[in-house]
Image 1: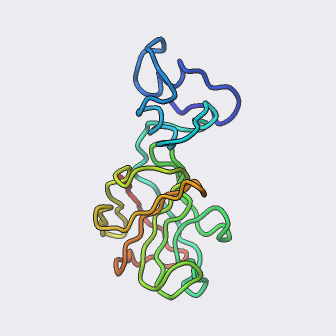
Image 2: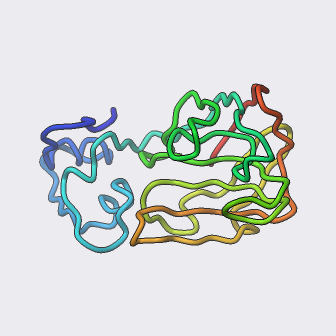
Image 3: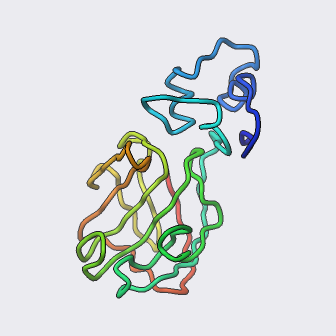
Length: 176
């Protein structure tokens, strides 16, 4: 069950989402709550839990969009990069996926031959273990990881490791 996407969230709903009884003792500062809400530190409120879920999202279907000359690559991003592609479920463990792409040319943000996975929220480097697509698996332990609390996002970057996405192609994606 996913927490409500807006409105009031109760501690009992958070407990149930975490697999506890509704009446178990629970604090917003509990590590399990902070992980679910994607807020490892700092101020936290129940509204940080909007739309969050402990369900592991595997088996995504991505239709790749974009182009390599854009400097943003080919893959998926629903926001500032022009609604690039689509993803069947854009949440992983309750945290929103906002950029997943290959980039083969120097671009506005990074240099050539990199793959990115960006999530909204500050999470730990081990929050995601691996990403698989197009018969290839990349481990996050081999990626460069950066968390940006000021901008509320986390990103893994793999250099010289591409999935080989083509714009308009459909790919099965697994995140663990």
